[in-house]
Image (cartoon, rainbow, N blue to C red):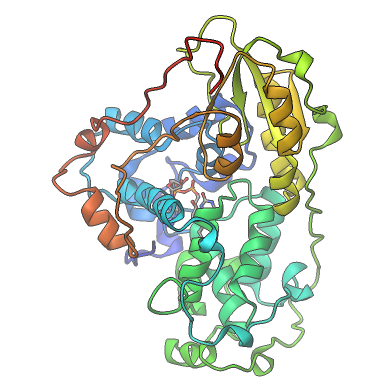
Length: 435
Ligand SMILES: Cc1cc2nc3c(=O)[nH]c(=O)nc-3n(C[C@H](O)[C@H](O)[C@H](O)COP(=O)(O)OP(=O)(O)OC[C@H]3O[C@@H](n4cnc5c(N)ncnc54)[C@H](O)[C@@H]3O)c2cc1C
């Protein structure tokens, strides 16, 4: 996830001038063209050198990957066509993290939402509410306040900033990782229950051997000056931080209201219902009767597949059971809604029973699987498998390194990985019997 590169944030800026910096992408338009522009801009060598820096040459592709506008396979295929990569290249390796988290979710199901084992402290030591000063970006610790402000403003956060924020929330402020994970998920454009919740567990030390800790020196090295946090609670040694993480008492580590905390940020209000402008209606059988349907959902917003039978109708669904459990900030509704609106005028919002009832009148429903919705999708139809980049492994691997070793065994290049046969076959029903 994170490795020291021996460079500093200031020496880096000169080197990345001609490559992608996060300032190039202040907005995240929900279009295939925007995803393609980000893919075209990938420079694997700059990525390798600089990914841990906040102004490093990262891709900012995650909202597009999470929502299925592009797959890991498509991204790597295009990058590799410009420059052949070794299987051990940092870029391939980081794509691996995403698929590893998917692997864990597939094997463990919703158990990923609870601690795998105890972290540095017993569960009872962690609070079940996020303190207001964190929520309002007003802790007085620049690295935390900057991260919260950026999260709310853009719906995005660099990986390093996510790690710092999570570590502070859990280990300094003694907030249970699940509380922090749910909060972050609701504000991210790329919120993914596996990548997000398992990363929080990794930082917490409930899915790894030790807690992830960071100090002011680390921030100074990888972040711009406005994020530096000298003379704050994190301006100390790793030994001291470890002691804090293992101490059950939050109060001594609470920051005093620092003078640098001059403005509070307003938390965008998350919601479980789609915005009115999207005009998502209740599911209606009349709209789809006798038709073959390509069912679009928030995690399958890519191109409509070219191999669908002629006349296939595109219907987008938003499932109330999922969205009321996992509300989204307005920016994410905007991202998903805009792409859905581009794909089809027929958009439904309803519960599983009403969507299922309406779909009964169709000739056939075809869709792509995704673990966020698997339980419901399989009630309605047989799904095409979600696209995978790495070989899917039958046995569960509890550490990334063990999974990586097995998933890449015998492969020397990204080309070899890409030539793996992926499970994509799907049969069209030949009779009126629905799947
Ligand atoms: C606390 C915490 C919460 C996170 N929550 C999410 C989340 O909800 N959704 C999400 O997609 N990622 C999450 N991540 C992982 C990572 O931070 C983001 O994928 C990455 O910052 C996205 O920016 P990028 O597209 O520029 O990444 P790049 O560095 O350009 O990487 C390219 C792609 O590889 C994948 N990737 C890279 N690093 C990781 C990683 N460490 N874990 C998983 N996938 C990775 C992503 O799909 C990413 O888009 C989280 C990490 C932490 C520490």
